[in-house]
Image (tube, rainbow, N blue to C red; front, top):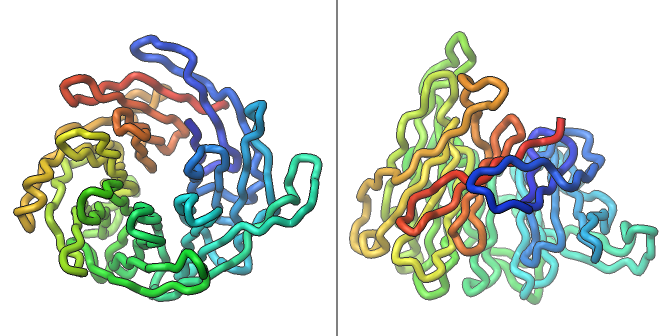
Length: 367
């Protein structure tokens, strides 16, 4: 497991215990040399490389060697391609090559491709270079999230923009400089003053493409505690006859006082033969999980689903203080869920045989 939020290094944990509930400390800590907070990290398909992005307008890529140590494989890149904070990075499927995408507050999404340099630095930091292949500029405000689509759809990328729209671009694997705007839609709850903050694809080649999208808008000025009243929404969209249509709205359970209820991240669990879909979202100080019946998504254009689990975590130092969650992620089999909180903790839950999530691991940052 790896985590990095609002700090300038990344930490790795390795589970070496099988107790029902365990607390682990990092086994490895790597300085990224970012000069500002890290907003996002992403493993590639094989888990051998990890990319980080930061408010310092740079992206860095690290590779794991045979001994389990992580080293930079190229010089940092990003600026001057991006001229503002970089919010997220994502890797394309390896069948399209070593392709990386990034989105920024400068209203652009950039596609980067790997180029071998032939250098032989002591730790391999000069052997690769990522060069700008294409810049997507169909946005009127900052882009907060991106996600490459499943590989069977071809080279597609979805982007969540603060102008209230989700856009899907189609690329060409043989020419990464060519990208077309294939479709766009406005999720429910978006529009003027709204922020489309996150999205996630359903990874299932046997069915039509689907996306889950999270957004929020401020409904009033912050109170004396700095808490901002917001209206959040999480919706599910499916592609019908080349048009995206909403097929479900996921009801959000109210969050306790003292913490905002912004939707910061969503993740659609891999199906792996299960009859139901699982979707998780980081909403304020909770992680909310929905279990969806696929047959209802096929026939209903707007039914509301209640969350089946509402998970929370309190600060161990201040048990009465709720900590906001920033990221959620399922494992490859969709049986374990991890969420990172603003205090640096990572909480993990596991599905039992009845489909209920039980917390089984807590990862603590180094002091």
